[in-house]
Image (cartoon, rainbow, N blue to C red):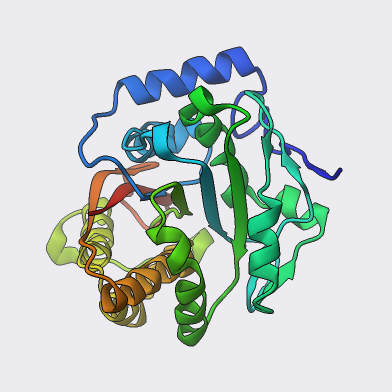
Length: 294
């Protein structure tokens, strides 16, 4: 049995289960239930001291009672991938408790011929999935041992590939016993990120960043895969989870054309790691969203 270690535990978040549980509970207590029950959420993946309070607004919308399976789609930061990749592990560790990877769903995904396999080193070093494992464990603690997870590493997909994977995942998204976690931070601003877009008409730099992010968030809320793609083409905003978001939007596009379901996505919270005021500053933006399906 291969186990995905919690490699960032102790640096990006507490390695103490008791302390971590208390921290996550505090974040959740300070968040509001605004758009529930979520079928999918968009939430950030930085260290919890930076993005934990924002992410709580997404996780707060989850009702674990009907959830049997949690898909976690995270962007690849360290390895270039043209496709999506699956974990070689069977269990993922967290300081709270360990969670089993759904091998039946993995078998179904592999059978499409469109999924690569990650080696364990790549898997463990990628934080975009790991940072959602403790939050998932916390929200699903009432069903400990009675749910599975489906971690998927999303590569630098062309738009036709986003559509392909959206079509594949659409049937799982439509199943009310499944929950999708879409892992993404928003604007990475500063010279170290090679992105210093600034529209002075919006005031200080941090206000320009917020305006830029919220234009993209509006496209996502409108559930327009084409609109979001055009926004990225125009502004090149450094949204690291743009491809997982694109896959979600394409899945919704497919379902809107084949079902009578009603989809509503709302952003519930926005934050920045710091307030940039000069070109020597840098920041990362965080946003939390919830998708409901009726």
